[in-house]
Length: 351
Ligand code: SAH
Image (tube, rainbow, N blue to C red):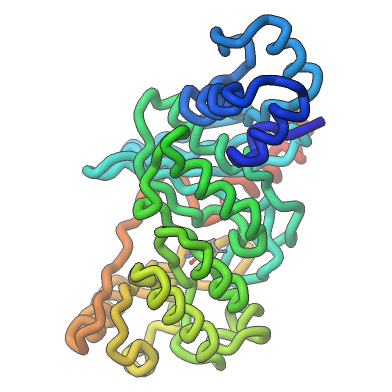
């Protein structure tokens, strides 16, 4: 069946024409799905009953099933476990900031990038998420909260640039003024560094922020924690990010997860300054969140601070990411894994 919620406006216009409906129905349908966030075509009060029945028989309206919501008592961060129609489980997070609600979404079920410290990739890639499945993470959270979502980060499970076409469509639909109208400036897509896709994204004419998961100042260390470093050299990745900045005018963020003894020494801080080499970038230092399957440890607080202070002293813009939702667990993919592990034990997962 046709996945109508994954269609961009052009595709929807063609669909409406093909089923013999007048052209204005495309805008109505788009707004029902992406602005009013309908859960069923029965809510579309300005569409005839016959047309609603036709839709029900010909298309699917993707919806996620909320399996569980965890709320942090510390900062009201919420983590959502959603079930997809094929029974796969994904996770999304809502963070509350002064400037509004920010939602972190997953782009794939699992991931094939193999980063050593990351829980999402332990069992490899299961499948890409459809555009609708990405949209509905935001839509479901906005519906459940009853509050507007104003920022999106694509930093949940999966490598978004490994699901390129769907992520670009996701951005176009969610930023459309016929949809939630979330400013592209408030959307961040994070990648482990897939060079050709970074360049392609630079040419899309979008206004989103690119975040690069750097995690090491040279290829040697990077290769020990990120298998993708065997495919793309840092100098090519940085060149692609420079191209992104040149084309979009958007400053690139470099993510740097600090792992004790691996990449958190002064020597690495110095190489990082050399690598940045006066570029207008922002470095986000993230204390690694240890996962039980691997033996990585968080750097101690003083070391993290010294690392940041050194960068700042050398004129490199850097912040230490505030840990949110500490009490409700987890880095990327941990919650989903724990849920699947426990439900495998009790075989109680019903979707
Ligand atoms: N695949 C994309 C986006 C997903 S992960 C990417 O690589 O950028 C979002 C960020 O969290 C990435 O920078 C990733 O490297 C980081 N990350 C994953 N697991 C982590 C952990 N256990 N501790 C700290 N950062 C982690």
